[in-house]
Length: 241
Ligand SMILES: Nc1ncnc2c1ncn2[C@@H]1O[C@H](COP(=O)(O)OP(=O)(O)OP(=O)(O)O)[C@@H](O)[C@H]1O
Ligand SMILES: [Mg+2]
Image 1 (cartoon, helix red, strand yellow):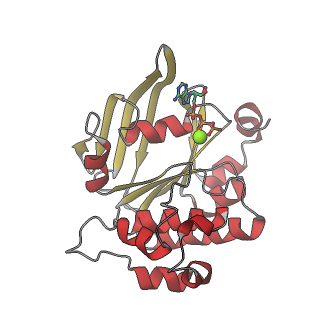
Image 2: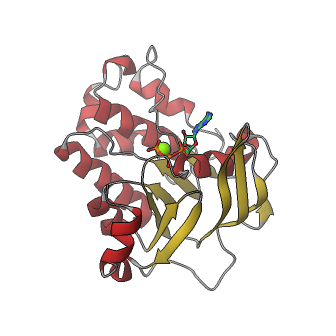
């Protein structure tokens, strides 16, 4: 897409990333690059290490190798420092604060009270009538899809330059899948770089500028969505079950 800036320093550069759970060597030399404004889809079968990649970038799993965010080395930094540098993370588990209202959840996402950033709460509520109707209700009563919207919106309130979103559409009804897809497209249009871990090819290919396929803890394919569409061999070997 036209908003991708490839001639400048990458937003994120991951070089030879390894990660372990105990003795289990889960990431075995992951390399990836995300340009400013670029939307990158990370595909792969269950258990290949996609979430671990996200966690290692965010410092939630100890990373070995080099991770540069906006040119700065972040491997080794604690998660909250990484987040404050402008790297937003929406993990798999949709962790909202159930006893707090939708609005309070969104306010908690703001990282710098002096700077209102690209996103504001009223605009977000206007985009999602379901959230707006429940703005002053405890977030615990939201549906799965609404919770997913809320966690993405809360992360946006921190005004990230790159947002990592892990399987946002998993287990959601088709209509909500479409809405989550629209939200991700809106984020991309605002110029935010996105690393999207997604199983649904329709969503990934609709918004991605670049596709990575992961297999056994490393990247086994990289290409544009157009190129990827022609690679039924790759899909067969690494994606279909
Ligand atoms: N906390 C953990 N302790 C030990 N092993 C783990 C832990 N988390 C993940 N694993 C293992 O690491 C491997 C990669 O897990 P990961 O969560 O990265 O997979 P994934 O690609 O995100 O797939 P999915 O989301 O479908 O589970 C899997 O074999 C998984 O069982
Ligand atoms: Mg996962």
